Amino acid sequence: MTTIKIRSIGNSLGVVLPKEMIARLRVAKGDILFVQETVDGIRLTPYDPEFQQQMEIAKMVMREDRDALRALSK
Image (tube, rainbow, N blue to C red; front, side, top):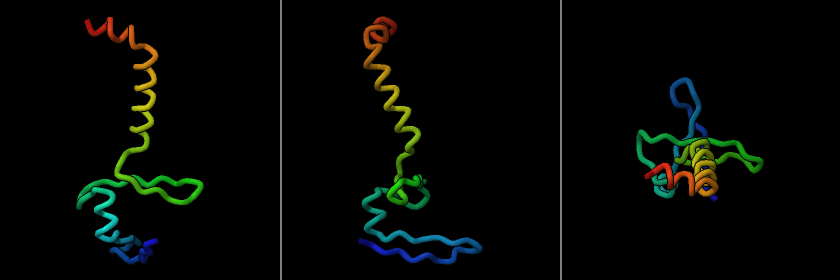
């Protein structure tokens, strides 16, 4: 378990992520992280959860309408 201290950053509060955590997230300076509240706490991810949900719906539609999409592609 890693502990992170809350720090003052200008007029706001923030946290600094350790290098190891940055490497595991595969992010760099300027990248965007998404924060989700879960029943277990906070989830920090470089992936847009809303986009991921939309892609799951798209995959389901493509599976269900495979024949129609194949016909439309011709």
